[in-house]
Image (cartoon, rainbow, N blue to C red; front, side, top):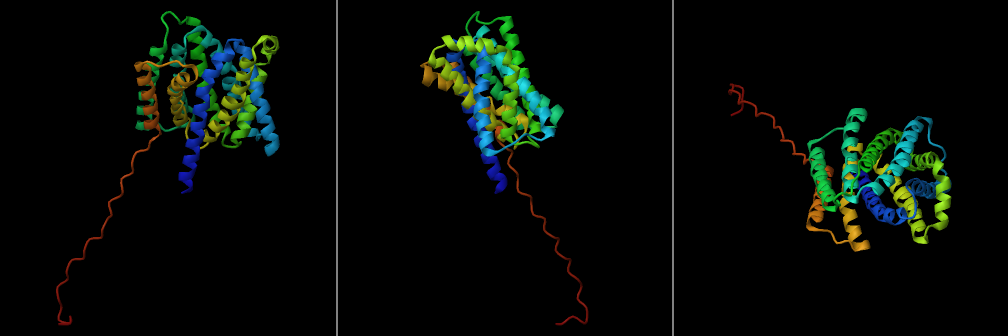
Amino acid sequence: MNHRRTELLAAGAATVTVVLWASAFVSIRSAGAAYSPGALALGRLLSGALALGVICLIRREGLPPRSAWRGIAVSGVLWFGFYMVVLNWGEQQVDAGTAALVVNIGPILIALLGARLLGDAMPPRLLAGMAVSFAGAVTVGLSMSDNGGSSVLGVILCLLAAIAYAGGVVAQKPALGSATPLQVTTFGCFTGAVVCLPFAGQLVSEAADAPASATLNMVYLGVFPTALAFTTWAYALARTTASRMGATTYAVPALVVLMSWLALGEVPGLLTLAGGTLCLAGVAVSRSRARRTAPVPVTAPEPEPQPESASDPA
């Protein structure tokens, strides 16, 4: 019963993460019109670090153990820092469909790195689910791509973002063996903010001219898709494999399509809807488990009848 409860809590945490990360794409569109990639990343990380720092003080979390610092530092530099800057930059160079298509190489890289470095299992259902979801991501990407909207630089930046994302996740997993999810997220966010400090001048100058809606979206990105979603991600990652968590993020493109439809009035085409459905179907397959067949009871052989002797009662 406790194992089942843990699985349900981890699945719930992963769901919160996926929904908030999907909402980030809508907010980035608004904030990205007024903030440059580095300034947006720094503002997002500072907002997230402030929220996480307050929560850590209230909960008296303290510093992570020394054994966790290496993983926290690597994930902070790669995922919280480098990833956010190059992704923001890449999405300014290519259309949304191409960006989603290239970045969705990340879960595949996570599975490969997890199997190589962490010894993660690669069950057939996980591989099949990832294949279906990746096909859905390709479909969504092609349906949303603009003719001539891509550049070589943009594709390279999105590819670097996918590599940084995968490396950050695999580095974070061992740190969760000795530190709490809140500690790993908080100090990873602090590390990313330090990495992005060279953009502080841009952030200050752009914040003076940015509309209030763009700044509020930047703060939202820091508090919810960063502080909250990265914490729930770490909570779920501590209770499952990196490969399975990476496959879960294939639900993001489908949710982005739905949220863009509801929030921005962007009506998706049939091809986009079909791709989103494939993404969700693949996630369902990758998260499922093979049914265990009940063992066949082994019955003891009946004793052979013994010949009657003279002393046997009649």
